[in-house]
Image (cartoon, rainbow, N blue to C red; front, side, top):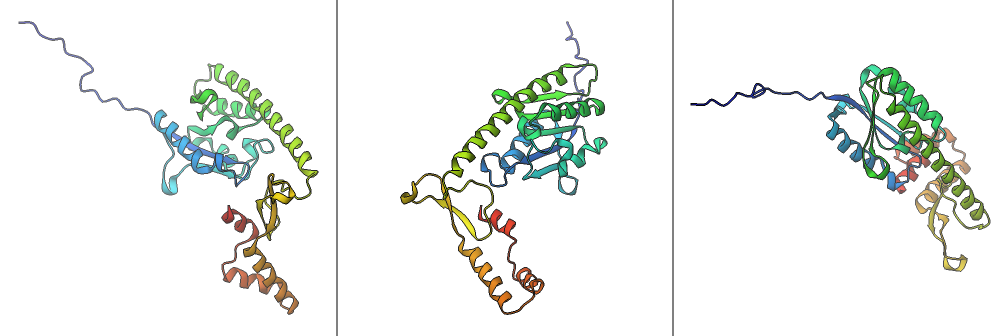
Length: 254
């Protein structure tokens, strides 16, 4: 009778290391639906699940959300929430972004981030890299210089793209300045809202028209000021009535 050799690994339970991750979300323009925080979170969650990265939950959720923050103007260390996490490297093992441009837009910023990741032995993950594939830069092995080299090469491409976008925006803004009724984007003054350009004025792009909801509030404020009420008293009443600030009003409108 022959016996079957016993597999020495049979019955052994292997545990996969779970990394403590920070889910990173950044948005330059609050009204940009194509790169919404929800879309970024979803992509980050998918990448984290595939790599065994946990963001925590509830009060222990690890997340850096920087909205209305430009990556060209503010490096990772200068952003309100992400910068705070970078000062506490012992609290996590990995940073996860949706795409490369959510993290940086210049070689200088990427050099700083890569240097930091190497010094603190962290993993940097981009859910969607060039061509759509996931990019993982693991700096936990300080003897491997390839991660930093690859990141700097991609940072160069991101910087070139950022400059191209800036040139295109400058050109477009210059052209729109020649169109007196054309809305150039951004948050309009309180009391106005974007609307399609009327056909009699070309029918191209958007213009600004009175915002009926905001106009009512403005008329109320002016009326009470003319009646002699103090601005501070008017502000208290507006808050009591749940009237949104101009910034919040614009966010809700969008």
